[in-house]
Length: 132
Image (tube, rainbow, N blue to C red):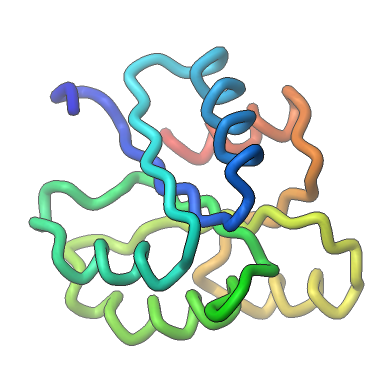
């Protein structure tokens, strides 16, 4: 990873979403490294074992995944965030339009935004604005 680049973790069980998001991010942002995780357990495991200087600048998290969903990830993240050198902003990205989910997002301090799928350039700009 380049010295001035930022790292983004994408935690989503949809490989096509990973591909599309990475391409859209690359069009809007230079010096960005995207690390893909198809299951939330792998992302939590990685966070637990990273050197402090290698933490991602942002996590983009799907809500609905097999085994460990986005809410389970948030619970696991709460268990390790005290050991991290910095708090990592998390954006939940999902196709859910359920008002209960949106209310839960508002009550979850770890989440800085909720973005609905499918992505478009305006939504990707909202993501890249969180990288500052």
